[in-house]
Amino acid sequence: MNANKFFSFNRFILLIRNDLILNRKQYLFSILGVFIVGFIYIKMQMPTVLNPFNFESSRYINPFGLFLLGLSGIIGTSFQETSNKISRASYLLLPFSTFEKYTAQFFVRIILGTLIFAIIFWIDAHLARLTTLATLSGKLTTIPVIEPFHFSDLYYFKADNTQRILSLMTMFTVGTGLFSFKLFFNKSGLVKSVISLVGVILIISCLMIIFSHMFFPETKGFDMKLYQYNVFGKLSNLEVYISSLLCFSWLFLLPLGYYKLKEKQI
Image (cartoon, rainbow, N blue to C red; front, side):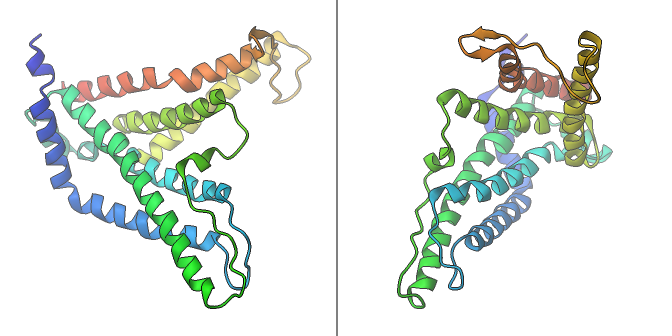
C-alpha cells in the first residue's frame, strides 16, 4: 500500500482546516455557551453576602464534572456529516483517506476539545473568584477566603498514583466510547451512544450476576459473588480485572470506530 494514500500530513492539516471552517459557527457557539454556563455555575458555588463561607480548592471538583459532561457532548457529536444520506455521501467522497478522516475528528473533538475546555474552565474559575471577591469587598467587613484554582487541586482527595491514573483512563475510555459508538448511528448519535455504553455496563453486570448464581449457588437475588484473591501484592483479581477494563478498553474502541467508518466508506 502506498503510504501517501493512507496518511499525508498536508492532507490531514487541510481536513482539520476544512472542518474548522465549515463548523466554525457551531464550535464558537459551543465555546461561548460553555464559557457562560461554566462561569455562572462556578459563581453560584462561591460565597455570597448572605452565606459567607470559605471556599476551598476542593470545591472546584463539582463544576469540573459539569465541564466534563459538556466535553462528552462535544465528543459524542463527532462525524456529524454522517447523520443523513446527502451529507454522508459528500463526506465519504472527500479526497481524504479513512484514517485521515478518523484521526482528524479525534484530534478536533478529543485532543483540541479537551485543551480548549481546560482553558475555559481555568478562565471561568479565576474570573468567578475575582468577581466574587470584588462583589463581597464592599459589603462585608471580613472577606471569606476563596482559594484560587489549580489543576492539581482536582486530586484533592487522598489517592495514590494508581488511583489517579485509573481516573484519567476511565475518562479517556468513556470519551473514546462516545466517539466510536457515534459511527454506529446516523440520527441522535449522542443519545444512542450513551444508551449503548449504559447497555454494555448492564450486560456485563447481568452476566456477572448469572455467573454468580451458576458458580455460587448460595447467591441471592441480584447479588454478585466473586472469589477474590491477591494477584500482585495487595491487588485482588477483581481490582486487576476492573483496572484492565478501564485502562485498555480504548484499545478496542478506537479501532472499532475506525473500521466502522471504513465500512461506510466502502
